[in-house]
Length: 177
Image 1 (tube, one colour):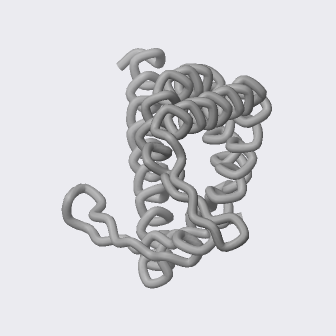
Image 2 (cartoon, rainbow, N blue to C red):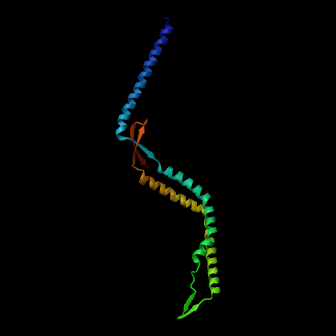
């Protein structure tokens, strides 16, 4: 056999032996790792700051978009709500210094109408004065704190069991920081 053919067959044999040895070594390390890992499970760190920040950003964007519409709808409903709540709230009779007076219906209606208009205008002025952008940011800050607190309370230290390859159970521990 020529020297070059002998050299190639040795290389193939060496390659297969090296590859097989490397593969078996990796398989052995994987098995040792699994034996060590299986009883304890795996701890998965969750970054509550990042998740809370991402949710806060999304909530603020949504609130800035939606709050002006909500305020406008509320303003549109003010007249009906004021009229419904304030109807027949003024007494038809008044007592002054022991004397009972009955107010004329026309005066009573005029007083009710003026009172309803004043309440309606004041409510609309309050709604017009709402800074929806600032309100959205404040809501976002609340969401941020709520998410962080909820994740700490509800998820920190929880364990779950998952099936690897649909057969091997593995315990997962959540660590919120």
